[in-house]
Image 1 (cartoon, one colour):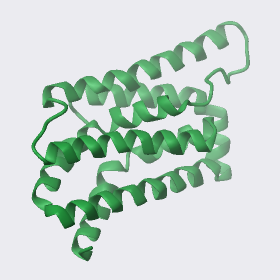
Image 2 (image 1 turned 60 degrees about the horizontal axis):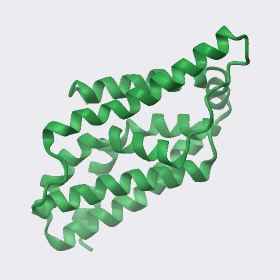
Image 3 (image 1 turned 60 degrees about the vertical axis):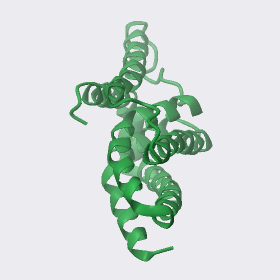
Length: 187
């Protein structure tokens, strides 16, 4: 494995996935860690597979379809906001949003990372076989690191208290914002 590819892969992963840390911290604060990790790997695995296939010359998703992936986090955010509103209206405790399922984490990861495909495909296409393998291996390792950092953030006392008090409101807002940014091509 060429060390130049490793350094480039670490830098590219960090830049293209820094926004994912907020979502991971929110997911970890709301749910079972194993579900979040499995969902993150599943979603990122799809992004990686599409990028590799795209780099090899086949395009699974036309570029015009990528912004529509923003509907996934947008709809999940609207659903979570509706649950918060209903709970407040009914006088329930403000904790109506259940922990995320594996599928919910995976779909948000895919939608949030749809723009990554546009970055990864051209880089993978020119990396050669050894470079492509290096990128894939480094990215898969870094998904685990990202999960650990997201979990760490969610368990810091100040962050954990804030997420416990406001996470039920923050999660829908972040999901709706991510969805709109993806949908309108800003992300």
